[in-house]
Image (cartoon, rainbow, N blue to C red):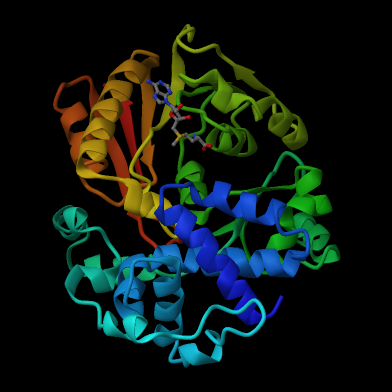
Length: 382
Ligand SMILES: C[S@@+](CC[C@H](N)C(=O)[O-])C[C@H]1O[C@@H](n2cnc3c(N)ncnc32)[C@H](O)[C@@H]1O
């Protein structure tokens, strides 16, 4: 496909997303209906779509319309490229620019230029202080791919060598050498031997740093296990008895096969059937995902204030539920992939104000220091 044909494909997909379709579903539908598109085309179209969604407000202003066409024109203007070079009308290229296209074009103003929804700005600014604008701007870029070395299967050096055999180049993070940033071949990871044999897992840097800071215990419960990313990280970190639980059993459906691949023995508890007490209970709660909007940019525009308020209630309830399973002097870890204080420090402070637990440590990561935005608080029963 020519660059112009890829832009036209992105316009079609973006229009479907703007009409309410989920980004992944719209991309998949296009790929299924476009057998002529090779893997390079699919990757390029995907990048155009996700880049546009990350910068949706500012590009719509630049491009003169909140439409697939407006977003593509806005991208070209932002990149100081002449839209007429792509919008030629030749072959599968988008139609040439019209006076109506040009009429709406303007510079983005205020929060628009930060590519955030208006309603979130006051919470964003009070959470991030003087770095608020820089973090918002960082969220407009693509996120790097990080891998976690699974110590049950390989050392960092062995994993690195196996990845390199498949043309995947990585750089270890200095403060945590089992965290590898992919510098080349990111799209090949899931087909690589290192991945297939469980030497590495896809996991962003900030949750890896948080999991590495968990205490060494004998019995741990991952109360909101979902796909099991944190349960597997705990097993890799040396915790031998990890139980996974989730209110939605379906969310854990891949866990058994992932654990087998990783060589980890993880016990799965049915929803609401956790029994006993644990030295460590981890709650990786449902959240706004505001720290990971580079990876799921359509979520940035879907979340509203009412949705956030509902999440705050769910998070508070999960902390209370999960705390029951913490053994005397045991630990309760609270994690979100959010940058908002309402979901992080304020949520933890409210829980601590009820008594029975004390704060051992807390840390918020942002894309300015550790890839995705993430929050981690470690509390201890007293
Ligand atoms: C952020 S996701 C967890 C991601 C997972 N820890 C991982 O690393 O892949 C949050 C999970 O919390 C679960 N959840 C929501 N309410 C819950 C509750 N009351 N008790 C337990 N799990 C809950 C959701 O089903 C969802 O899978």
